[in-house]
Image: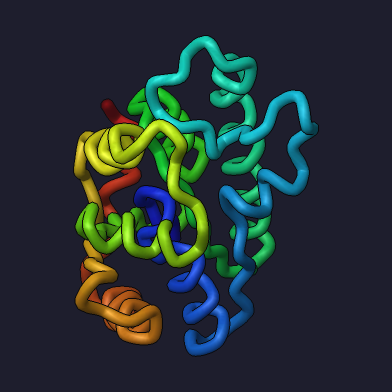
Length: 186
């Protein structure tokens, strides 16, 4: 499953709750893990904010995402469950990632959180952008385009445990994942 949303929306906390509560082995791959493996010259790697095409990492983002999703697919094909926490803001890259997961039972989950809550979380963690609120607003806008999801969660009203329970109920349901198939076809 892929948890897609802006930074500080709660994706990593949901991934941790999934690991702690859902049955089976759940690997957590995503922006934080990818950042640890990305060389300093290409930081922040896949975590690069939207609207920074001149940044050195921008040219490498499609390749870095491709490598991440190929690793996700490999884990899944080996029988491991994977929770991926990312912030997709490039539709072409997202479509390529969707094609890399074809044939796998992958859910795309939109993780939403109001801007005011995200700004409060940033204040609490000392992660306020020097440029002000505009880069955060840009993330909020662009990360949910085109807005095709199998499930959406709002972390301002649901705890990580409640999000994990909602995901578990969706996994136990009878609706097959469709978002990635739709994106791969676009």
